[in-house]
Length: 632
Image (cartoon, rainbow, N blue to C red):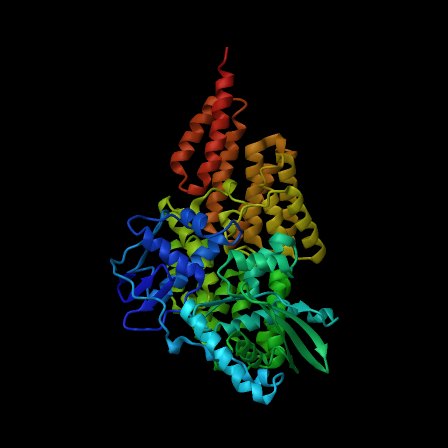
């Protein structure tokens, strides 16, 4: 038995108790493993890679699962990352257990605790339907004896509790036969996730957050059974909710399945005249299936006009699938129908941010906060405001806004993926300010550049490697093209354009396709970033890229005009650095030594750390060219 501040832990039985309490703390098996490992190796820092390799099987979602598990364990212990008492995060190294511990002799474990005996599993009413009345009492006694034997031999099962439960809401499937109802896939599913977030103890992953991974992996929002099993295996998710919407009896019907790793799926059906308007009652009914003994959650009823809610849900769907141009009309319509719908106003600001209308986006965010001070909305707005300030090169203000998200109780307990995005952007900003940190991996080393952090609804939260097969990515591109999912299509094309198995010519071809898609989306900042990727391709590979060298100046001129129009100062400075590099590259053929000298001078004047990898590669090219020029 191990004792530490406020707790005692039995690693043999996998049980954690608060001191002076006989009831064990409800912990998932993965959290028990994590706690045990950190305690066992408390004399040293345990790296993230070691934890992933030891406690998690290989899978795409392992890093997110580790982050979520650390967060959950801290929550159980009452710990805080900013001022830890139990688990310390060591930047760029890993985690270490820092609370002093005492090893004591364990008490006997096979004791009968009637308070932990769950008699609610004895369904006598169901038994009576199939058993003659005279046998009912005897059967109940037999079942009770069996239950007592189980208690004596095996540890008592954890009582079902919402505390620490992680729920994944998958995109719904529209089986109404009406294309105009496609908004239920992400829109209605997102409304369900938002209401589930209001229930204490539930960690919720929204359909918008997981849809990015589904689209990237398969080009389809609908998860197959193997995908769901993989998601549950690779993440800290306890239950996944999969739903299908149909018309039945002049009503809307939600047919759902609650899928977990331990149990068979639980199926159900909820009918309402309007599922969107009735979402709070739908979630209450669903929660009773998730937690049969958890009571009925006290959720506030919607005060919004039904048609405004429908337009909002359509906007969520459009933003993920078609982009900001269409989505802004839905959110604008929702806000016009019902001026009190603050989330529609906030999402309208996100659309304006994408479309390069930063001042208008700021005004919308301020308007949303004036209408509703709900903590989750405040964190949402703070993140997107931080992204605007980052793009304006106001890094201190961006960092302050992100800090409010990371320290918010709403993000810590209910919207972990948003806090993850804030962490990633914070790390990136810290790197830009100091030249060190996890956020500064060069663009060439990542399937999706750092510049795209937080730029798309379809950007995966986790750092995932590109698929091993080019053909797999190309299949996804075809599927996304057919379905018209433009943001995800753009990111897949950018990933293909940096795939190491492709030639420079093939890579550049995919970059040109990405430029076409992003121009259609009318997102100027991301357009300029993609133009810089194309310029980078030409600087590194020249004629091997399969395009005329004159295109380099065209890419840079277009990117610079966009940056100046947006007043994106960091982006404009990056384009200017590329322009200097392009000028020096032109000198290579005529005067390689002068080119080498100019590159060394550029190295001392440019402060952008992300530029260093490209500069080093071009410098190496110049040195090689100079050496060849001076050979006798």
